[in-house]
Figure 1 (cartoon, rainbow, N blue to C red):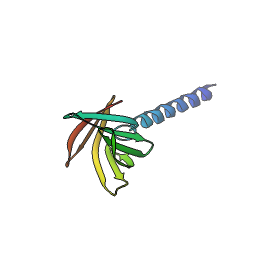
Figure 2 (cartoon, helix red, strand yellow; figure 1 turned 180 degrees about the vertical axis):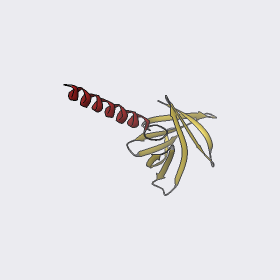
Figure 3 (cartoon, rainbow, N blue to C red; figure 1 turned 120 degrees about the vertical axis):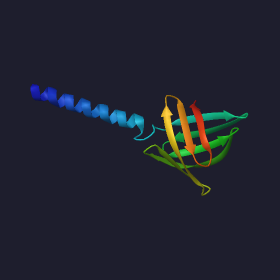
Figure 4 (tube, rainbow, N blue to C red; figure 1 turned 120 degrees about the horizontal axis):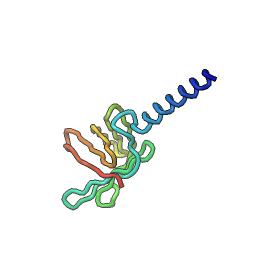
Length: 110
């Protein structure tokens, strides 16, 4: 009986660690969903699904591509051949992107 309780405890512990890693995405947080930023009357959005990303401005698609995250870094490869990388963090429904070209921008999950 003691061994059964230990095994159940170990399985529960491993499950909690696995869920924590999945929720955090192993870096700055898991990217999934649509995040919007409105500055100077223009709304820019990023929609992340699986490993794909769609960037829109004013409702029109600007670029599409794939992305990956690692250690708080978001790397994007657009289908038009352009690539970019950002430091990113997610806190609640807020995504903050930062790089040397664009500076910092804060997006809210919709």
